[in-house]
Length: 465
Ligand code: SF4
Image (cartoon, rainbow, N blue to C red; front, side):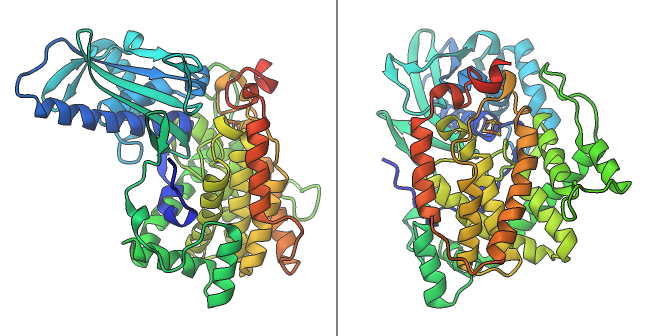
């Protein structure tokens, strides 16, 4: 039973520091593997008599199996099993975990050595589990055996954005911290409710979130400190991407373009229309190229769509002299949109296609930027609605299962759309025909109707070459 509500989701859950190339196929599986490691350690500590011939298996199902090679799911699982964390551990250390395990073929679980050979213990499975339909397209089963005897098993779903849900008896249990049981002063679960709160109380969108987070135990100081760290990581990622060239890994021979495009921009290449300089596209591509290379990125709300918010916010920061506080406000407002999509539709390409990733990040960037520039709650909602509406139906068909084509350029295009959505909403009074709540219903239904081959399986569309 999934009891998640939009006001349960913290900005610091929407924006997470991690590694590329995918939040659902890399960050989520790594966190899930690390969580299973904790369960194994607890289990072995509780045993009076040590079990013998212990070994661990990891089964990847559905989309994780179909595109996991291209998304480095195997490497991420290995890193998680040895206890590494996507945010806290070094990028090189993370990617060295699998080569090390391929040689050592065993893992130290706090003093207990357990066999794990990535070649045979990591299994790429199909679209059923025990002959039943998968509970989620990104399902993973971790198991601990003593010889043939099953000692411990855990089934989880990586549902996008680095969020991991437990599956119990085929039902999804939202994997949160438990803070969702805390009553917040301004409860909301829809965009309409959120706007009503702002208008009835006179609070800004940022103030509503800050007050709710404080009730859940996160002070405004800590919230802002956490988000500033997020913003600095984003800027570092853009800056690395702007000075790095070469070929992206994975075998597609995709050339990194952000550096040379940025050099053209600095030389004064004239845009084809007066406001259309290359910066938003270049910043988005810089981040997504870092992501595709397995580098340090922030989920926004996913890794595949991680370039769009950085691109929009960095461009507006430069053009409007925005302060760090303004940018943090923008991230807070953007997180409200991300939470609404997560609850009422999905931020997973494997569930609803790319409309859930780039569509969502476009809406978040547009809504967040509108607030940063002084827009009203209704203008924020309008900008976010425009951002989603014009991505409805967008499929996820990455070539070779790599988060490169169409993903990198798609973030650039989405960033430009988001800036246009901000301009349109700020130039109006926020009234519009289709509400954000309605467009999320449509997005969800469109995702349900979408053929599986267009949902991160690399079996349809551009993926066919
Ligand atoms: S096509 Fe979109 S949803 Fe699919 S991997 Fe790329 S960015 Fe993610």
